[in-house]
Image (cartoon, rainbow, N blue to C red; front, side):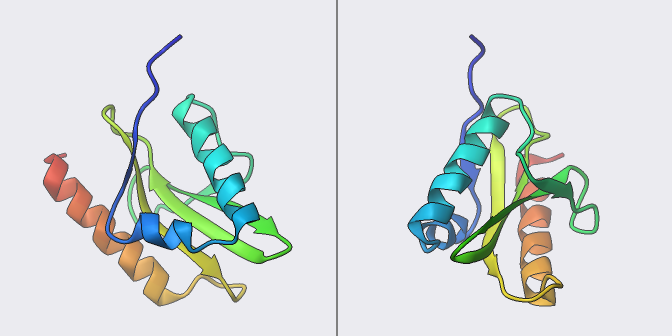
Length: 112
């Protein structure tokens, strides 16, 4: 069995994830576990406007629509850069800007 990549949270992403309703948190954990095992999340899409290799896990349940923005291209960890509840059809500029800022900071810190 291969070693799982750890999941690292940037900024307030972990606190934001913990604010999700229980059902969405459980699904988020399941989807991140899939990514740790080298699989794809069940419902995801790339977000190249934020950065290369950035993906969004989409969780929809009775409590609403939730998103986890992450990057798994680095060998040392999977980085969750933003978690939020989506309230409109289009992702807000605030959420996109925050994710992009955290991605840039991650790239600077990793030197990649």
